[in-house]
Amino acid sequence: MHEAAMKIAVCSTCGSDEVLADAYAAWAVTSQSWELAQTFDKGAYCARCDGQTKLVFMAIPPAQQALFEQ
Figure 1: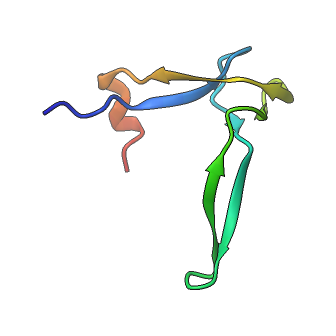
Figure 2: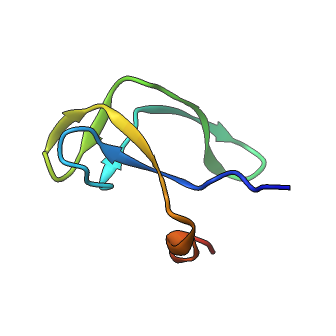
């Protein structure tokens, strides 16, 4: 069985992975923390560009995936 390739979200303008996506978070009473409820395709932000961007999801080469695994 093949595992799904890991992907990384990057800025469509500069290629940086210092990006944020707009999302809703819901307060979970039982865990007393915010839990991600929904992300949106529109409304991403790039820290390097210091502005709005569109996200592009790039495959991470298998040889580099270990750098991102916990």
